[in-house]
Amino acid sequence: MSRISRVLPQGQKRILASVLLFLALSLAVPWIIHSRLGGEWPVLTLQVWWPGWMAVCVLMLLLYYLADGLRLYFTLRVLKQRVPLTSLLPLVFLNLLVSNLTPMATGGGIAQVWYLRRHGVHMGTATAATTLRTLQSVLLIFLPVPLLIIWLNPLAGTGFGETLEVTLALVAGVYLLFFYILFRHVRWVIATLELLLRLPAHFNWISTTRLGYWRFKIRREMIRFVTAMNLFLRGDPIYIMLSLAFTAVFLLTLFSFPALILVGLGQGIDYFETLGLTSMTTFVMYFAPTPGAAGVAEGALGTLFSDRVSASNLVLMILLWRFLTIHQGMLIGVPVTLHILLRGHANAKRQ
Image (cartoon, rainbow, N blue to C red; front, side):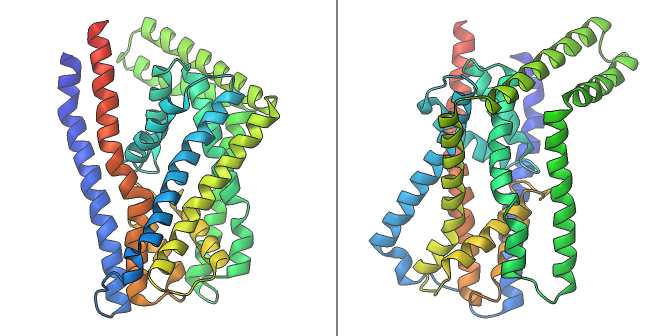
């Protein structure tokens, strides 16, 4: 307990800084977009408050959260891990909160592995499950984006557009190369981790015994990771198809929110075009260095929709889109995360 009390103040400062940066960027970019486009500050139009529109919105949110939990549930079933779905649904909100308070969502993966370990899943297997879940989303987003850029041509005729396309292509290539090395050349990953581990041992920051312990643990968990990956490729086809199907449902629901919002604002839309532009926005968000892609997400969506949506509706669409898909889940994630932490602390005290 004393160790936690020493670390907590510093952790609180980091969390507070991430929250403030997240809020500042989330509000600043819509303000900048509005200032550049001009016009009066908009007021929510009547359609947004129609019971029918709000009912559809609630149903989409329920499907969004449920599909997010089910895609991990069936990925775990492929790996022969039985974690009840009721235990995985809190993980949806824990992940939404933590991943959006850390750059490039790095904390989300750690939080998911930590949570799954508490439910009896080994670290290597939990890491494989969360990696596979992410990879399924990445492939379903990355593969169609080059075709969408050609079809929609959202930034045609601009130097910025050409630069952006080349940059995204290079970054996406590096991203996929990382996953390829992780799956096909895991020994390189183990060697790199052990090399990094030798640095603190060289400066006598950790003992030789501790170095040996961590080397053993890294090798053991990486072997479990590779075993889980191979198990997925040879797993039950039904569970594999269900994990892919619910990943597709999750992404389709996520990408449909801007279309739903524009309908509520009385804006005429081309649903498939809106779907394509939103998927391109999500593609950009994967490489955003800010917490929860704050600022980058709003800027990308605003840029891609600026010629298709009126100025007042564009700002509202951005704010409502981020609230429904991110901010609301984070708000739910606060009490859920506190409950998980307090329950874990109570269990530890009983033991």
